Image (cartoon, rainbow, N blue to C red; front, side):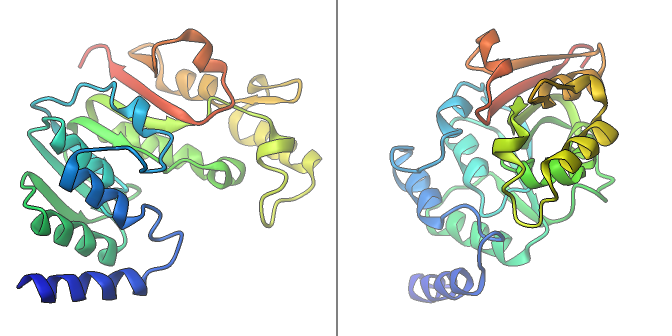
Length: 240
């Protein structure tokens, strides 16, 4: 495909996909590919993500969308990155961007992290997947479990350590009354994680992992584990 046809196809794909299926602006990916710069990408997780050592690693990027973190990892020295997503148009955009800017080392394939039976990977990305809606609706349990199943040794995940349901969950579209939200959180995750007006999601995730794992916030600050800001965590299998 020549450059003109490539650009025409890219623009057609972009116009055919609407948010939330296209949740990563293509311009942000192109900025990383062309300059390596993250300035202006608008992603608050990126700065923390850059603290992860990806050099020489084989990586699986679950829910890769158009390849933002896939290509950022390759730019920072990853050996090979497989990006998986359920939206074929997003994957085609990711492939075109890699070809357009001559960034080898990425492989994109269609697949759901809920149904995948693939091998474990040395490092797994699970970024911008677990959100407020999935936590409130209880889908975060299956999402988290799916990510962990794919991990050979290291998981790079974004999540909000602590929720204030009145602030983060009650205003969501279709959300029930706050009292019912609290009841559902207790039923799904356990009452021990619901204290005062806070829901301690990271504590739940830590206990679900069990003793064979170490959870490190990025940056490495113990206070970040009790933050209400969504952030990056580096989770390592101790016996991996």
